[in-house]
Structures are given as C-alpha cells and as structure tokens.
Length: 275
Length: 169
Image (cartoon, rainbow over all chains, first blue to last red):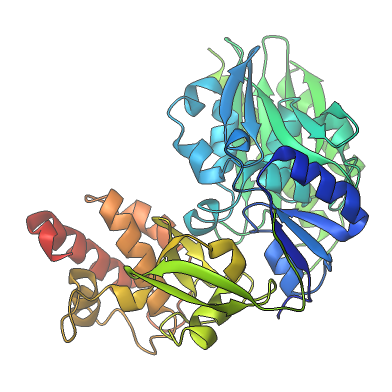
C-alpha cells in the first residue's frame, strides 16, 4: 500500500502546469486534493511517473458567477464550495450532491474538479454536472476548449480529456426560477460510494433525471410531465437501458429496483420544490 | 518550478504542533509514514491506508484531513496538528481527551487519535453541535470497539464543558 516512485512538481504558474503536462504525456497526472488519486497510487492502480501539484495557483482557487453559471476553478476544494454562502441559492442541486461526497474529513482536501476528472461511475459530482448540463473547461499549452458534461464522461474513470489537458474549471449552470431540484442517494453508509444516486430537475413541462452508480458513467434522460403510471413505465425502461451489473455491493436487479424507486421519489421531490 | 525527483530524498518543512520540523522524503512518501518514521510522531495511526477508516486523521491548515491521502511533499509549508498536540501540558489532558476517558469512549485506542483530532477541529468551529450532526461527522471514522455511543456522549460532554470554559480547550 505504498505508491510507486514518481517525480513531483509544485507548479507556480499555469504555463508550468501546461508545460509539465505536455512533457509528461500520459505518464503525468495532476494532483489537487489527492483524495481519489492517492488511494489509486497507493494501490498502484495508477502509476504515473510525474505528479503536478496545482494547489499553489491562486488563480485556480476561485469561485465565480458568469453568465448564469458558476465557474469553479481546479483548486477549489469541495468544502470551500460547500461553505460558499451563495451556493444553495445559486444551485441547490450541486449543494445537495456535495453533502454526499465522501466525509467532512475528505471534502476538506478533495476538489470539485478532481472528482470530475476522476470520473468514478458512482461519484456524485459528475452526476450532478451531467444532470445540470454543465461543462468542463480544458486547457493545454496548445489550446483551450469547453466540453459539455454530456460529451465528457465516456466510461469507467474515462473522459474525453486529452493527456496534455488540465481541467481548469467546471461550469455549473445556476438555478432557473420555477425549476425544482432534488438529489437522493442510496449507499451502505452515508459517505460511502453510491449504490445508486439520482439527481432530478423538474421543469413546468417535464423532468430530467440523471442516475449514477449503475452504468459505466452517469446517464441522464428527459421525461415529459406525464401521469404516474406513464412515469413508472418510463423509469422501467430507463432502468433496463442502463445495463446494470452485479458486483460486491449489489445485484443488477437491486440496482434497477433502486433506479425505479429512488428515481421516482427524487422526481417527486423535485416537483415539490418547483416553485 | 523545482522538480523533486523520484529516487532522491528531498527536504520537507512544516509546522507541527506549533514548532517547525523538517526531514527528508521521497516524493512518494505518505504523510503518515513521514510523521511516524521520519519525525518519530507515532500518535498518528495507520489503518486502511486508503482514506476509509480515518485513523490517520490529522489537522492540516485548520481542517481535518487524512494523512494517508496526503503526500509528505504536499505538506511543505503547512501547519499540522496531530494528537500529540492536543494536551495543554505534559500530564494534563485536553477537555475532549478527558471526556473520552470519563465516558470510556475508547477501548483499543487505535481509531481514537484520528477521532480526537477530527472532533477537536469540529468543536472549535461548532461549539453547540447537535447530536445528529456529530453522528454524521463521525461517519468519517471507523471504530470497531465502542459502538460509537460513548464517543458521541464524550463529544457532547466536551462541547458543553468548552462552552463553559473555552480557555481549557
């Protein structure tokens, strides 16, 4: 349970981060809070030869509001966003999801962008970002681009980030007046990885439900504002389309049942919050 | 931008329990091992070594954090507190430590150092905690002896005593 050897750079500027990433290729990894990466290093699931520490760049530690979206920089810790006084008013869904991320003792170090970069299939923040149709801002020595969350997560811990790219920030759309938001999760203990997690956004004419913990990456689907039995049928189809698998924590059947039950109650809660 | 090379040992300095300390570490060395083997501070315990159990929890720059999920080189320049820094003087226990003793909030003691640090951080910022929030907060720690009830009782008791005489923290 000790990491293999790697070089370590404490970057002082963004240009240094980009240069080190370009130089290191797929052997280089960004380390921010380290709450996902360090266990992977210790278990030697990840064996980078270079770590680039980005936590000493003040320009990355900013939370900004721009064009009806929150822009959360790569250096913003989960606890810092959770403690930001405007969060609940700006985006209640992200606030609710954050409370399910690990424990207070890991949120104190873990970053928002780090969780997005790690892209664990059962992680809450990728799910919330997808539900809200957020985006990821990537930058490298050669260019800068913005990728919608829907195009970012591609599989288990895989994303469309290039080896030389840094997730510089994520964009989380602010709440829309009249929409209702809800987040629910089922895990063995609060703070454990989700067996199934649900995020719902209720509009006037329909609802968007995103599910984590079931497929290889979070998945979202939009439903019209139908009656109760039509919604049950739609949730049934969504549950079976997600290709749940059996694992140590739960059977595929159990996960599908949770998608139906927890999905439905998340939608109902979001509808109640629609005001 | 200094690059710390993988196979060399590099000087790491930080403030530990109020005084500056320094020792050498390879970049891959975890803060747990740095504290225990390089600095001889064995109060911080190593349990699961992947961030789940909470035994290695220390305070880094004012917040509780897993030492096993922190590289020693990341701690350069930080302010760190470990269980060794809790007692106000040799032979005296902090209010929280004393409450743990009176409530039998520990048996084997393995998880205790992490829990003490975690609660110490929490009570400083939340002088009037509800039992429910303490339960949730303690979810970040595994204890296989006590069943948690005495730990909760000790934390609530300590919070009350600290409200009366905060100087005794």
